Length: 123
Image (cartoon, rainbow, N blue to C red; front, side, top):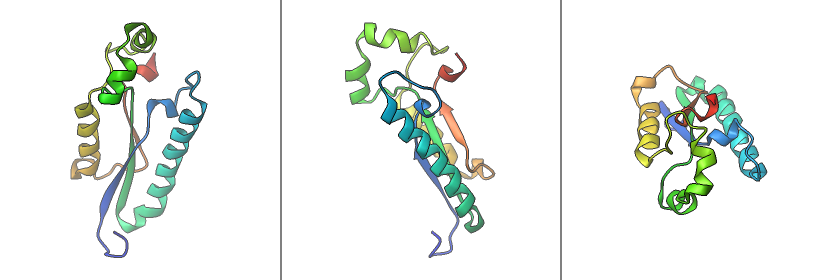
């Protein structure tokens, strides 16, 4: 985009785990936190080139892998009980957030994290 002189938008996919410590997830949480900071630095550096950079931070997403790993009610109960909306995210929840951040409707948004967690971080 810089070489071509065109404005644009980049959306990184992070996680709610970048902002909340999760037991047995040290590497995952720390790398997602690093991605959030990389997003901020990229926003700072690319902003003068009219390139916006943001991140989405979803909760568990019910992809095929998500369903395999989180379908057991005993395993998922502790996490779902902390989500005020009482459910995990669906793929479309994340896709729609990304589309918003890529669109002109978020033209003044850069360096931000859009949390798609059903309220997990407020509980």
